[in-house]
Length: 437
Image (tube, rainbow, N blue to C red):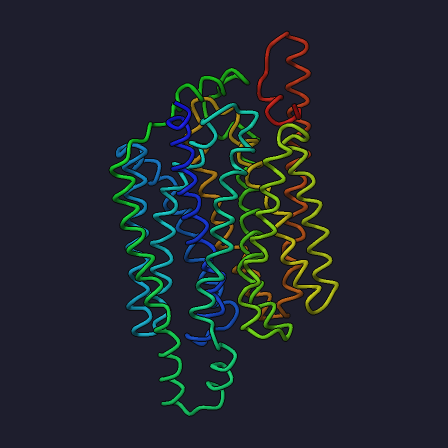
C-alpha cells in the first residue's frame, strides 16, 4: 500500500529530473553556440530566450490541453513534443544554422510548459499544504541532480578542446575556418539524438503506466476555506505579485546557471575548466533543496525561507561584482544556494487561497517562467555594452523585489491570522506559510 502511494511522487520525480536535464544543458549550449555560430553575448542569450519564452506562449494552451487529455496523456504528449524539439538540433548541426537550434529550444520549452503546468500543482496537492515547500524541495533535488549531470555530460562532449578550437579558428582562413566550425557543430548531433530517443521511450512509458489524476477539486475546496472566493483571479494580490516575483526569480536563476561558464572564460579561466561551472551552481542549489527538506516547515516557514534566500542573493551578487577571478566565479555559483528555496516558497505563497481560480493561477505562474527569457537577454545586452561582470548588477534589484514579496506575504498572513483570531475561524493558510511546526 505504501509502495502504491509513493508511485505518483516517484513518477513526478522522474519528470523533474527531465526538467532539470533539458533546462540546464542550455548553460553549455550558450558558449558552444557562441563559438560554433560566431555570436556576440546578446545573440548567445537568445538560447535562453527561445527556451523560456515558450512557457509564456504555451502556459494557457497547456492548461487547455491537459483538460482535454487528462494528466497522464498530457505528460506523454509533452514528452513527445520535447522529442520533436530535440530532433531539430540535427539539421541545426548539419547546416550550422542558429535558427534551427533556436526553433528546437522553443519546441522543447513548449513540451516542458505542458509538463510544468501539470506537475507543479500536482506536487502541491499530493499532501498537506504546510509541507508543500518540502515536497517541492524533493522535486528540486531531482531537478538539481539532473542539472549537475547535464552540463558535465554535454560539456565533456561539445566543449572538449574548445580553447584549442577557438585559437585555431582565429588563425585559419575562411575555408579552413568553416570546416573547423562545421566539425564543432556536428558534435551535438549524437547527444541530442540520444536525448530524443530517451524522450520517446519516456513518452510511451508515461502513456502506459497507471497514474491517478490529482484531486484538484478537493484542493480547491480546502483553499477556498482559507479566504473568501472572489469573482476574478486578478483580485488576488498574492498571486499577481507572486507572478512578478516568480518572473524575476526565474530570470536571476537562469543568469546564475547559464552565464557562469562564459563569465568564467571572460575572467581568463580556460573553457575546458569553465565548462563545469554550471554544475557547481546546480550543486549549490542541491544543497539548498536538502536544507529545505530538513527545515521546512519544522524549523522555519516558507516566508522565512524566502526572506533569507533574498538576502543571500543580494549579498552573493554584490560580492561577485566587487571581487575578481575565481573568487567572483565562486560567488556566482553560490547564487544557486540563494535561489534554491525561492521556487518552493513563492509557488505555495502565490497559489494558496485561490479556490476555484487555482488552475488559472497556476497557468499565470507558469507564464512567469518567461522571466528566464527576458532578464538574461537584458544581461547579454549589458555584457556587450559594458562587460559581463558589471552586467550582474541587473540581479540586485531582482533580489530586492523578491525580498519585498516575502515581507508582503508575512504582513498579509499576519492580517489573516488576526482576523481568524477575532472570528474564531481556522485559517490553514496562515499555518502553511507563517508558522513553522
